[in-house]
Image (cartoon, rainbow, N blue to C red):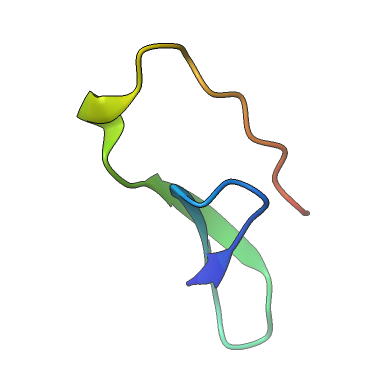
Length: 40
């Protein structure tokens, strides 16, 4: 897992740093949608 610019969004990466997906933590606390920019 690797952090992003948004503290609630973590990128899932493999051993070589390739992006596999992402996780959003604490979704229920958001009142507005978030639109993270993922590094690819």
